[in-house]
Length: 548
Image (tube, rainbow, N blue to C red; front, top):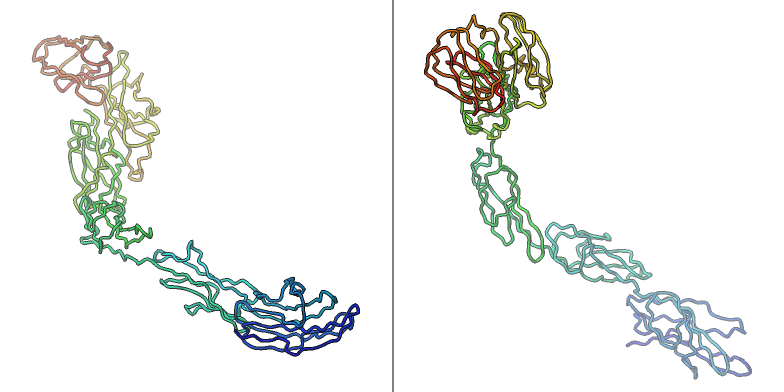
């Protein structure tokens, strides 16, 4: 250890203090200094008014500096006072600044001081830290990490330099390694910060590929394969943990994995699977065609990717549909005439399915089926014409029902309009002769530009007049009836069959009397209350109301 004397020249002053002459010699010794500095460091007591104002600087790049006061005489070390309040002969300097020591002699109360000295130590402490928790930590690949540097002390560094070569106050490392900062102050002192060890978890580089075409027909599968099988790997959205999967649903697929140690998550590329699914076709309307008397199905092509349209009609079993025809695809309004339909006999239910290039038809089409409105008629006891019809199903909302009438083959005209809550109408004073009726459904059918309206089947009165009956005059009584109905003819007739049908055209009861005569009775106790038609020999229709 090299010991240097700050003030080596001894000055002797003969002092007169309270009648005593005291000889005091004061020196400052700098311990572990890198160089020596000398200067006068004493002055006389306050009575002679003389003192030295020279100021010496001692620069050190060490974190601390050892200062000591050397003096001649028997001075109590407790009487050595430093300007910053420290008491004692030896001390360690931690902070840069100006320092001076004063010595007081107990017996004479005489005093002397050292000169001021500026001490420069490396009191700047350099640190770095991360904005993530922890110093030595493993981060997930691709994580955004910032490292910052800061200092404490008075000698603020003029330059920063990371071990990466960066000279900014913060950096964002992307590679694993140990990071630190070296700083330099104006005095040329250098300092090195603490070290942070940053580790990025290795990217698994998950990749998937499709082993088959990703555009398939609905119901077919696509095989997807990952380039590796790792622990914690799952396929999305199936969550299978195999290297290969077969998918049948359209969607976006990828693989992800979570490291059980670091909890880092890794994702593969994404593959989109397209399953060609036939579109759902919505029928605009089903109407009774005035030209053919058959049901006409109307729908509109909205640019669906189909090759043709298939028309289905509900059979004798509910919700079971039969294919009755096909129509090629075009960009216009689509229509189909059901040539086998008999609208006067019953209501019909239809749906249209678009056939895609795979030959598939969307099963959802049947949920958009339409059911026609079936109109029936009966002759009232006072000569009125009674109409009743069933609901049209498939369009909502229906605004109203309009009743149209034609007399003796003339033009149809609007007779009345009723609410959709009303399903019957009586023409109390029909004009003489034969009258025909049909119901028009007023609704937004999405095909209004086609010029087609939704019409029910047509019914006619006048054909039941005795002059027009093939079987001659007939009477049915009592009507309404409870349990027994009698048919009375004005002449002997041959009766092959009697059918009771409801307003929807459904056969309720069939009788095969195989008899000839002018009168025949049959029971109706097994038929529920309601309005029906009695069909004789499949040619004549008579209205009947049953009320038990």
